[in-house]
Length: 39
Image 1: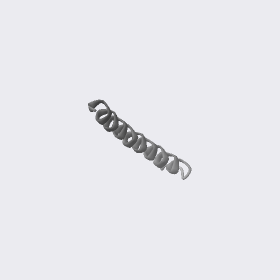
Image 2: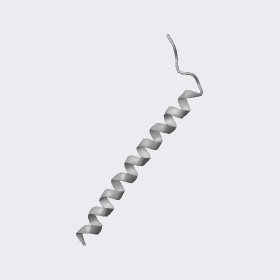
Image 3: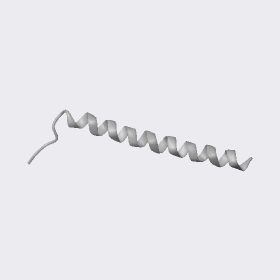
């Protein structure tokens, strides 16, 4: 069976970090918008 090539592993980790970062930024943006519109 085929194992993942070494050059593919960092790309997957980087993509996962990018997705996590986007989720975090999106969460903070929604929270900030909620507080801003409540004023």
